[in-house]
Amino acid sequence: MTTDRKTALAAIAVGDLFHGRPRRGTASIICLALQVREKTIFARRITTQSVHEFDRATGVEIDHSNPVIIDSVAPLPADIHDIMLSLDRKYREAEYRRAEDPEWEMPPEQARLTEDEKRGLLFVSHFYPKNPI
Image (cartoon, rainbow, N blue to C red):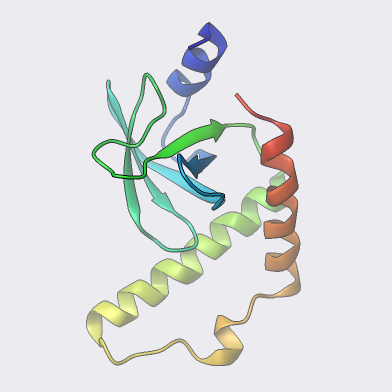
């Protein structure tokens, strides 16, 4: 592992967005750092709200059969960063609603991606692969 990768992973802080891909597969996993400890990073995947624990030294997800590997920590432009945070809020609020009422479903008009959300997701799909660590 290069020193640059170690340095980039060590620089992740609470509130940072970063990107990863599973070891097997091509899924794009955009994460929000929730907690950073000496040896681990806890993060929430924006689109699914799943929580992931990463080894801070390697960037590899801990205790997972197909671990996500952090592949980019490049800072997003402010407008795209804000769009990703708004998507996180949207999906997190939906999770809270489902926790209160398991029968609850997001109304179709709210579930559809807005033009800005589409623009943000399209941007990161090109941006992160061009800015690896």
